[in-house]
Amino acid sequence: MLQWIVLVLALIKALNACSPTNEHEQSIYCNTQYVFQGLLNGFNISSEYSTYRVMVTANLKGKIRTTGQSLNVYSSGYMNSCSPPSANVGSVYLFFVNSNPWNNRPTLRQLSPMSLVYRIYYQQFDCSCKIDVNMEGYAQITNQVPRGDKCVLDGNNSCGKMKGSCKRSASWPSTCQWIPIAC
Image (tube, rainbow, N blue to C red; front, side, top):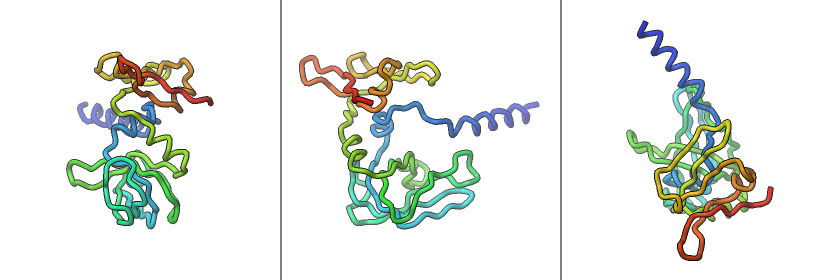
């Protein structure tokens, strides 16, 4: 009986593991150790993991390597529940990478096509502000910080907020507020 329960739980985890995230792009950016622009020089995939051979062209958050240096970034392989993001060798991407605590390997969190618009978009984020998600049909995310230190994504003007950012106001008291954009 215990084996069946473990099997069912593993299946549920596998089915839910690749569900789209309901995190705001700002939360993804702020909760990632390194964000950098890189030229993809190679891509290998195996059953266990995928390897992206990348030359760093600009560090946007943290410094994973000096500009012009190369590194390998790792992701899940095709036998894992989440297949790795596909990418074209010779193209430039934004890599969102965390250092794996068990083996210290740079591990891919997100891969985005590179454009100047994306680069400017990500650089405007204020990581001192947290974002709660309280929208119907989405898993709720609640940050345990004071009300003035966060914004709530609640479905009102959701497109403008999803594409916008949460920043501190310039006036005193400096509280976090939505800076929506037109959709």
